[in-house]
Image (cartoon, rainbow, N blue to C red; front, side):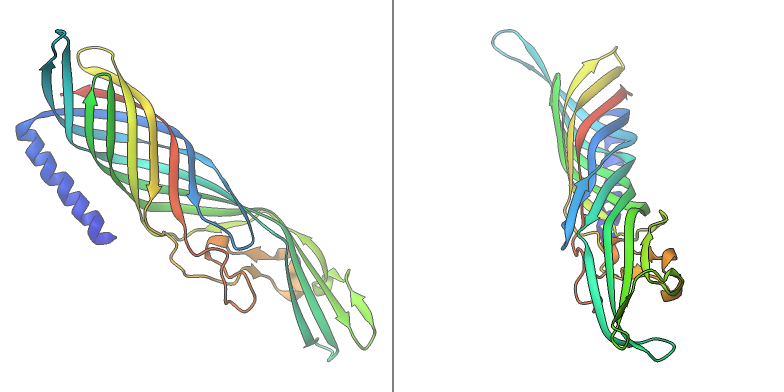
Length: 295
């Protein structure tokens, strides 16, 4: 991935040097919004796509070709040899897990009594937000007022957060000698404990995306134009690093202060043999506006 990003950067620089001597230039400011999310499947639960967007600056080097048809109509064709720039993209996702249950038998407490422990985790709801620095390298073709662009977009993660919005941890123990359940002794870690709304960082890798755009151009004056249209970006590679951790963290006598790691980087069972998900892609689709000026 690093080699690919370096190759893209060199291509942008060389194309810019070529463009300065051979054609016209267009600079732009853009903003977009719509469905912008991390795409993955959970082994137990469901994922809700979130909304986000992108803003940044762009540069296009293009040539103009005038074509006269039989009816006398003049068409101007714009061939964009390269479009590039730099932007920030925000992706939001929400993960909800099915109720989880684990059991441990023949444990021994500090007084030597043998018990079975049952742990239930329910109502888990996790929000995720990731920000990528994006660098597009795209080709453009336009016949006024319509145009399309296609290419790739490199995404470098600069921020990733997850937050537990809701969740309940319930611990109960059965003591065989006394034939009794321990369910309300919160001082010993037994009972139900609600989440206190903590969060943490997400460690994800770079994303290489397929990027498509289709827009309509409205000329404001001789130098400025406003473009409006739709876009679609889809990550071609898995951005999960596969560095998974234990899901629930708590101390037995202080279970009320439990924490969890994100489902994007956690094992789904106590034996650490399966994960909640092993493949994560970026995905965005929505509306984009671009204010451009020629030089």
